[in-house]
Amino acid sequence: MLGTSMVVATIPVTDLDRARHFYGDTLGLTLLWDNPASVRFGCGAGTELSIFRRGPSTADHTVAHFEVSDIEAVIRGLEDHGVAFIDYTEGPLQTTGHIAQLGPARVAWFHDPDGNTLGLRQG
Image (cartoon, rainbow, N blue to C red):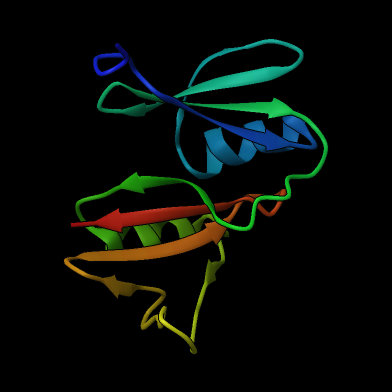
């Protein structure tokens, strides 16, 4: 029934203006529309991401990730915009240069201003 429907990631934020700046200016997503309670961005390949005003998130996992073709270049670009990446040194996830190898995929993680975990995935 839903196999051909677009899925939109929805991420809670406490400060909509701050998040609009982060997702739009820092990450470079395209603003599609906004209203007093939420903002919708275009992300490429026909995908969209919505942020909405709410209390702090309690998610302890990656809430959305971006599929990229050159993870090192994207990391450098985001670091140039002040994004700090999460590095892991113990357990099943270990990063080198902010990147972990998960099967055939290379992945990296960072937080938005509200502490939501976002990821990059190549492969």
